[in-house]
Length: 294
Image (cartoon, rainbow, N blue to C red; front, side):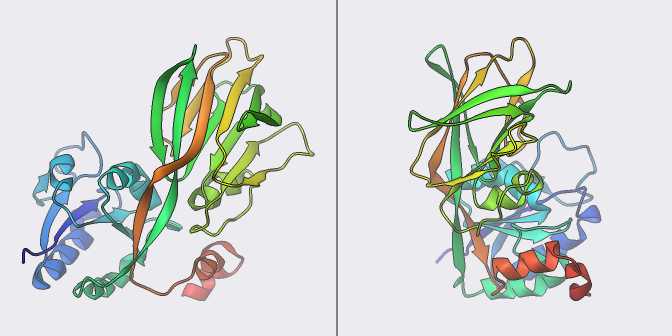
């Protein structure tokens, strides 16, 4: 039986000198795994990965059994589409800030020994299919783990959006924009905008306005069976953009329709510990949480 192949994807700005990556690579090889180091990002500067041999990611994904990231949640989000399309589970090692999606902290690398028997649980996190229709033609598609965000451009102005669910009117928004978040994304931008915290394994869509002028409308938590349609209204030539998991901005035009629905794809997150989401949230977000970790 061939040994399992594990891809290591370090963010060089977080794992400086590749110290954590080298340690994990050695640990995994001692347990009999095949490993390869790949960059999660394109166009990295020469020397960013120290003396580590780094290979192109896409060809290695075809034969991979697991992908481990070293960085923050942003590194996982950047790779979520790729691992979902290739049906590869991902395990995050948090080298950054809050790290809600990552499974392990930088000081917990020895817990990777639990991979040896290859008997671990995975959480299937809901994702969003996002598309843009212009004059009845689809001109943009993307897949996101956290959220789809429509917001103003660099010059601050009020934008007007009309939101419908399965063709029926849901809300009119006048403000800085709107966030449609998954449960995983409920603790990201949506939370900062005043949205609710949702257990990440739930199956819901959160519609959260950004700085709305309508104080009676805070947010909606909807069944994932709905298809949301967001249409620009009365915005003239003012710049409005669509972001999926903070990907490159896609400029929207008047009368464009943005469609958001639950995807058939999921991000599979490896679980090696028994930490509950409530425990993680309490430690990292509630007052005194960081003090409790010392």
